[in-house]
Length: 220
Ligand code: PMT
Image (cartoon, rainbow, N blue to C red; front, top):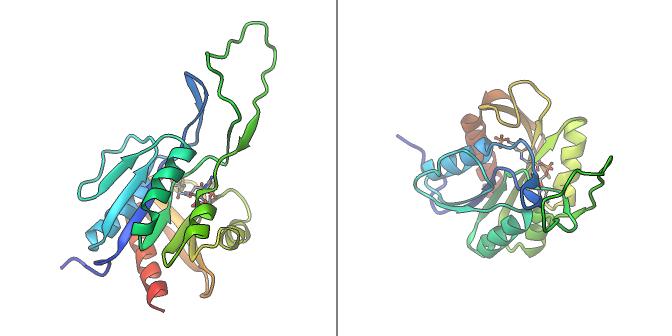
């Protein structure tokens, strides 16, 4: 008998990378495949929630049983999420959003002729979670932290700085976990309770563990 413990929840999930144009043919991006965010969206759907998935460019098929909004840039992702934020009871930001973007993308393809070096000027991209946190009424806000060192302290700092209820800290240097893989391992941190460690497991199982932890927090 499938669990229906998320029935009545309206869940906004972000997934995948963003792409920030350098010129008409090139962009800055990252290694996110979208698997983690899609797993969260599917787990919430299967547990009875209404789900909207806002996704950057991925190779994954759009999941059934939910609205899927495709975006490319951090600004488009920020717009898509903020437009739907008032509807949501829970937001899960699994997307790997650009922290910086080119200040002014070149209008024409950047040429290499005559250049021995090329410097790019970048400006901060919108911090979507910080923005949503400032708009929040009663939504539960869940972030992810992709870290390459000092996993827990760095994730803890993001939990507080972005005003989150939960953060899923993943060590993206761990073999078989993080970007692109089918499995992940994480420490889930909250503002109040003790950290919870989840060993290497399929992203779908980790998504279910996260939803269970989030529900416990919402009911506490
Ligand atoms: O997609 P996969 O291949 O399955 O990989 C999964 C994953 C490694 C991408 C995922 O598990 C993960 O860690 N996602 C968050 C990646 C990230 O951007 O981490 P961060 O530590 O830079 O950001 C912290 C949080 O702020 C994240 O929830 C992020 O979505 C959010 N953020 C970041 C930048 C920004 N401009 N706005 C944001 O809201």
